[in-house]
Length: 358
View 1 (cartoon, helix red, strand yellow):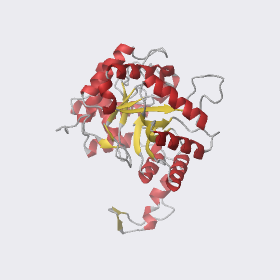
View 2 (cartoon, one colour; view 1 turned 90 degrees about the vertical axis):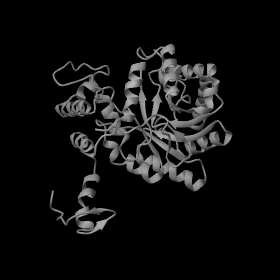
View 3 (tube, helix red, strand yellow; view 1 turned 135 degrees about the horizontal axis):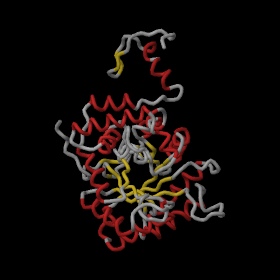
View 4 (cartoon, one colour; view 1 turned 120 degrees about the vertical axis):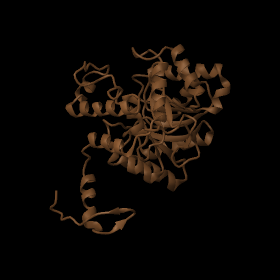
């Protein structure tokens, strides 16, 4: 099958904004060896250089990654390559605490946000952050306090755009609507786990993001390496992420992985590229976050941008990974048969079906 020409410099606008970003964002949770795994500062700089050389412009980190070392590594790189700063879309996150025992060092209150932002700016050795993420929802803090503090950071010039990660759909919607009604800076993106092995976000989060103008940025698109091609039926199933990953290696997962190998063979590609291509082709997805501990991993993952799955291949993977979505998703899908039976609405035509038809 002919592969579609694509690369990192085929930029797209993120959500309902004019911010141009690469279709693959370089995640840097692997920068630094402070957690017992990851890339050395030297290897991290090599990965950064190669990503930028290939046209990438989107870097994602967090204050918590490798206890702040990830941000420091990026800052050290930019200090020796200052010409790259304005070309980059540099994103980092607040929420995680780097000071155990200090109740205001983490979370999403104004004091914590401002302090975290100042500390990240110092480690990154820059005077502004392009995209500042709330890393997770802090239910102890009113969302209007968080949004107002973020708006103040935007007004001050220290932050350009804001987004949410790992937050329930109802809370994201509440925050976005408050921002719109009060004239505060709106959210432009939503960072969530999304892969062939994590599709529950299709119930609420992805439809909400589409409705509210948020670009979806999947993280862990290879599900902690389970979809990378390292694990296959009949072979060793020891994973680097422990019991949680081991529990996912079910018969259904192994069947899905075999399909990834088969499709990869047809494209003279790899299972990881097929899995990444599937995620990137999903409705609502803007820029997918990829991580790499080595240059080889980076090159292999980036090659997924040149792989275009056929509708048949995409449907096969979707069927093999079909999740059971929570109420009322399935009920509403079935309701199409009684809502407008026999009529075509926006290209959707459904026959009549009784409510008792399961």
